Image 1 (tube, protein in one colour):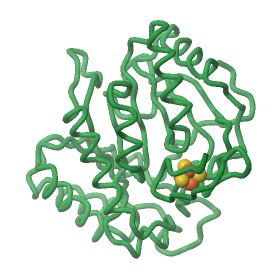
Image 2 (cartoon, rainbow, N blue to C red):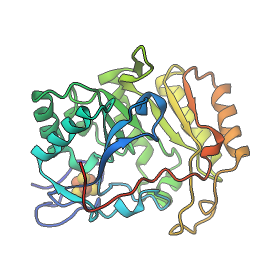
Image 3 (cartoon, helix red, strand yellow):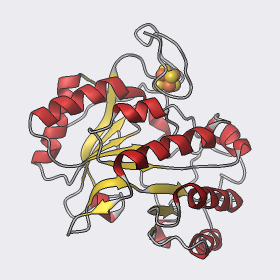
Image 4 (cartoon, helix red, strand yellow):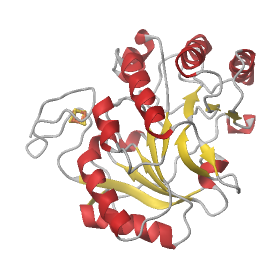
Amino acid sequence: MSCTICPRTCNIDRSAAAGFCGCSSVVRVARAALHFDEEPCISGTRGSGTIFFSGCNLKCIFCQNMVLQNGTLGEIFSVPRLARTMLKLQAIGAHNINLVTPTPHRDALVEALRLAKNDGLSIPVVYNTNAYETVETIRAYEGLVDVYLPDLKYVDPRLSLIFSKASDYFDTAIEAIAEMIKQTGFLALDENGIATRGVRIRHLVLPGCVFDTRNVLDAIKERFGTDCPLSLMSQYTPIPECRMKPLDRPLTRREYDAALDYCLSLGFTNVYTQDLTSVGRSFTPPFSDHVEI
Ligand code: SF4
């Protein structure tokens, strides 16, 4: 079957060759564990049951999880093992199941989520994505995913082409996010402040690119309004593999403040901001070919 799961539409048979995302027909998982570095409404006090998938359909040159980009790191997981892993994470207290970079693995994940829910998975399922998705793929998760965390990275096609090899990024991502909101609404929290359902749009402010952060915020306001929940992230950390200016340095406090001031001036009412100590801090957990859980 030729793969059209994401907007790359490689049209290749993944049982014969890997696609642009680096994924063949198997699912590789590089970490499954309780994770405490998400927003408080996701990590809570007991941690988010996070499953990190190997392979990615964007090739961001500044990616914090670069070791996962080509899809070769990680242990092969069958559909039943994926479902069992979700149930184990629930059993050790996870607030939710957090699927990180799930895009290329749609067919296995839809099956695994159905299986896990049938076997007692009851905590919310979080879909943590770069937002470079087709509407059809997001529709496949209707009724299976509770919370969407799309990272809307750029509006400017020059940036998305140079930094992530996707000149159509914004036009594609905004439609995928519209489908996520149509399915689940804006983010809702329980009495303890933990996410139960809905969408929060993330945006990582990039060094030297505050102009495009303004474009992103304008676009969100225009399409979804100022009640749309946002996370304005400051945690950009330069990696040795990326020497391109201005991505070779951390975000400055002045840049983050400028982005936040603009966000608030637009009237957004529900904005999660990161402590400025997040600037330059590494959020990359250890990945491996052997998954403990
Ligand atoms: S999921 Fe991978 S193989 Fe399929 S279209 Fe996207 S990049 Fe290509």
